[in-house]
Image (cartoon, rainbow, N blue to C red):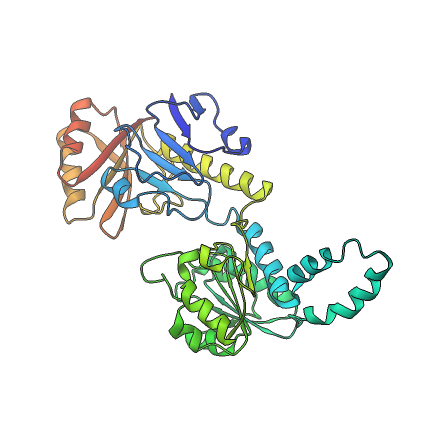
Length: 388
């Protein structure tokens, strides 16, 4: 019996996928796995039996990854599950930062009570809200992951000339990118050619404040910036300076801070990127499937702190080992199993920076003493035995 604790309201589309052998809910004690959306886990004390955490979303800023890795806890996210929802909001922002629709709507509300004068007042005042069309303009897309690709393709279909930049573009992602998207070889190429720039990269130490005074200075005058990835990617003070000077015509963000609220030419959206029922269902389903595959079979897919390792079951017992990425670890594991008379039928092992993950399918039951010997190796962070 596996125990799954929900730290937020998780869509039944996901929780309903756990069948017999699972207890799921927000009151679960000593969980084997945690399902979370926005709740912060940084101050949470993890029980020793906690094996995995799955976030129903892409960002994992609310999860202490270093702490989880040190305790052998796999952390999963759901890349791509909310991609279409974010793409649609970005497309809306392209239009909203161009056509001044939001201030126009707010102005129209002020005409309430003017009776027969409204029609004439609308015609007289509408010129102050004129804005350009996006067709024929150039969009620069920084980051061509699941969301960036959808945005690039959608913008092209709307008649925009699109540049895309991503030095880590995967082969699978490249297959989904329209041939019409131009490959920018540097960020400076994006900055120098784009009328609109949208950013879709994770928030990491080397991407924090990548939109800063220096990068803004390289952009075209009157550029329109869109940030629907993470607030920390843009330095708000630099953005405000660009708006004041006219270098930036509009700024749209799904992550406003206090300094941006109420500022003219800032479209501050209250983190609505994934706020669709379809997105919440997709994320919940994907997170639940990741947890079940890991708990039942030890397979790792879409983990942010462990390498992707997955293989079909082939043997009486499966041994799963989360360990430090140091030399001779595999030979030590094999030696312990050989002494116990256990034959390895199949094995996969991959490393990711300081950590590695190994799956061993073996013939015969693994005695408690053998499992204990494996876990007592100084290289091993967590050893788990899954019966066939």
